[in-house]
Image 1 (tube, rainbow, N blue to C red):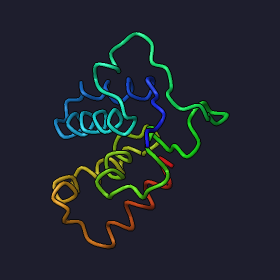
Image 2 (tube, helix red, strand yellow):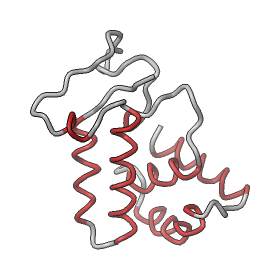
Image 3 (cartoon, rainbow, N blue to C red):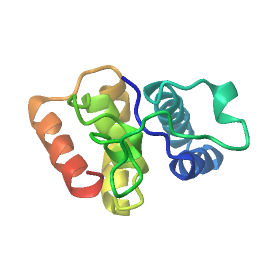
Length: 130
């Protein structure tokens, strides 16, 4: 199953590649790559001047039914890793929360966050991204 692709969202994510924080830039690169993969596209297809949706059923927002933030499918639960980067990269996430999350980055990448942190991350995702 492919998801809708939002070129404007990808452009915003790619702008973060210029961040002075290496972890933030890496997170943006990983998120961009995941967005392309989740949409069922290749980078060659992304770089063409005009991208047309493959799905016929679009919602009023112009996304296929069931698509979520950043073009992710809503038919599955996002991993803590995906939620972490979406919260970190969301423009709606307050700066103090982003600072707190930077301390979690290594443990999230290694899959070593606590159950309480997993719940906190889920709450932040629902508050600032979904």
